[in-house]
Length: 97
Image (tube, rainbow, N blue to C red; front, side):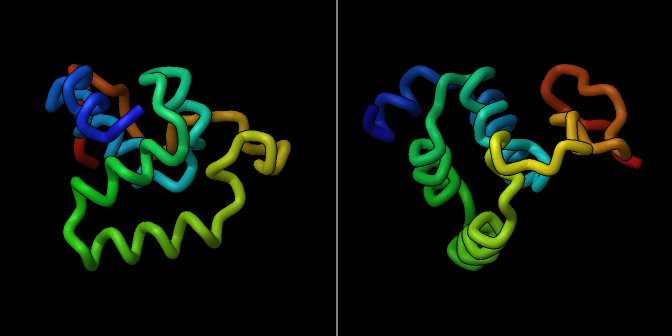
């Protein structure tokens, strides 16, 4: 699927939510795929387009280093997609602490 067709089928709120999920270290790519139907490479392309160049480089380096962005590689004690500090999600917005 091309990046243009991804953007055609997603709303701006969904794109924002995907960026939030991808930025969160504990959210695996599998969760994004199950919720939005985007594969890892599609999420990477979306992040490249949505983030500023410096933020993209920081995110990409972080994702390369952490193995639990993939559900099969996660330690057995990590069973949640949501950070324990995160409050309930309402209308695709995360409440501030």
